[in-house]
Image (cartoon, rainbow over the protein chains, first blue to last red):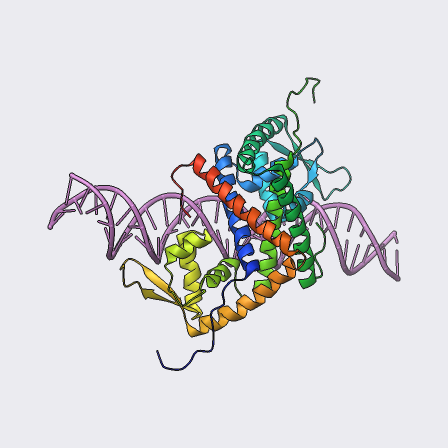
Length: 164
Length: 164
DNA sequence: CTCGAATAATTAGACATGAAACTATTTATA
DNA sequence: TATAAATAGTTTCATGTCTAATTATTCGAG
């Protein structure tokens, strides 16, 4: 436009920003892959991950599910609504706290969970078969470290949040 | 309820499912951390990542941005709308293709990008300072491998999609 | 024991996103 | 060259999510 010199520059990306991009990308691809592997069950990722939590016969509070999946309580309310509509789970009153509900799988829910779990497991194997055992362990450990570091950094911004 | 034996069992999680959970968790935490570090600029993650792409003075097509960020074209339209409202970018007609537009940073946009980039870089350093150089390299390489493997698995479900 | 603060779950409202339909233009093919 | 298919971008609509407000119940300090 004019002949003034513009002082602002373009910055190029440093290593941590490249890494950040790869993490983003991996997640988006994973999400897409999940969506595709789960669509034949008419399940979204949150519904699936909720179902996955029921590894035993224990009833689970909605708040517990929310904490474990890092999804808001209102999201979990709706996820459970939908699973309940399908007859896969039931809400039962919590004997210890009348504010709370316990979500439990029905017999049908257990059957479905098993079927879907196996299919998704298959899909995961397909992705991770291309990794050596060593690489899988490394990845697992690094992800745990990353989670821990993120929690530390998050709580240093906002000292309120500190659980999980 | 009754005394029938229920054949369905609960499955416990195998290694790849645990890994899957850690990746999910790391992403959610990262997203949360991002949101917090960017909120003082009134930017969401997509707006930020779009801004980040402008490493040089080259104009970029919306489709290119969409491909690079793995966000839909309609999302990018809206992101660019917002950035244009703020006066940080401009749409200019593409001289080579009259269907296309080139998005370019304004002087103000370059200033803002620099400022925001630096702040976010700071935030990333804070997370990754807890990793050794070796760990960062490992993580970077593993994420790239994961992306590649996911692309292979995705394209084996649906042979249509194959670029990026 | 009581009353205010915290907590479990739900609901209402806002926002970000993707899929699909649409318009304008370009590319490829017959 | 005419026409069909592909592509760039926008708009519309449905979905999934979060925040904040709400109700019911429990916890805890005095």
